[in-house]
Length: 446
Image (tube, rainbow, N blue to C red):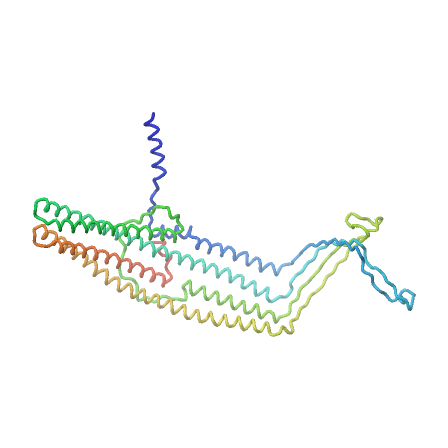
């Protein structure tokens, strides 16, 4: 019975500590980020919010109807002085109190814009705002893809470095066993055994540093994906495709999201200028109202003529015309400010196009250099491995020193890490090249 209880407790403990490791391809990591990262979610919310902004502006062109009510008590009624001649008493002055202590009013009012240039311009601007946020959503998604892809490759490279150092650790341990066997048989010096032990200790320290780097890089990747930090992830050990790119094709920067966003912003500033210029135009609106008023010496609500309370209705319909004549040059100043904003964003468009062209040119150069480096470092790593194998054999036969053997091991580790770093440089440059072509979303389809 006790054994059964112990097994149950142990199984629960193991279940609590065990955590599923999530394997992530680049495509899966990007899709997860687009679904869960706050930046992507907020961009979608802005697109949704733009619909309500359009509704808000559209409401200004629709009738505005409101109900109103009022209850007033006048403890002291104002006295009005009147010439008595109007009442058959020339040469006298009459003081008369007009009104009742209690007045209650209830009614409905309506206002309808007939001509208002700011409303018409606002409707066009609101629709452009929706398009602005749609482009912004696309740009945000591209930024999320770029960050995730960059960090994904960096995690992969850190794991590759860990693989290299594990291989070095394993190889060095084999050398240690050889030296220890020689030392036990009196064929090696104690200093040789001590040196190899120091080497193993240093490798262990380096391995811990690389492990920390892997963890930090994985945490960064999970952050950019919007994934809980405590989630355990694994990057599949698949070889990256490295090959020539279509570098002769110059991308059309006018189709880039960054450029399109600025163009849409330019359009919005144009509408903003037109909305300010609308201040020069007259406005015409229709107003109408219907009210019911009750007056008397006591509270009118519920009162009757027998109580001295009388109710009556009144209504009005009118046209309201407002013609701006002079605003102290305020409108002119606002128009000129809007014109400055337009000229400024035109400069931003020129600078952005130049920046995008620069990014493409730099990506091309980096890819060319990386391909050359990859070929060189791959051959160098293979040569370093052959040198290490030969040096190890010579050491066993007493034809090489321990220093030669350790140097050969260091050279192989350095060459392998240089090869891995060259692949990372290539993949990061490849992302920039894809970005410069406006094709980042193709990473989802691969």
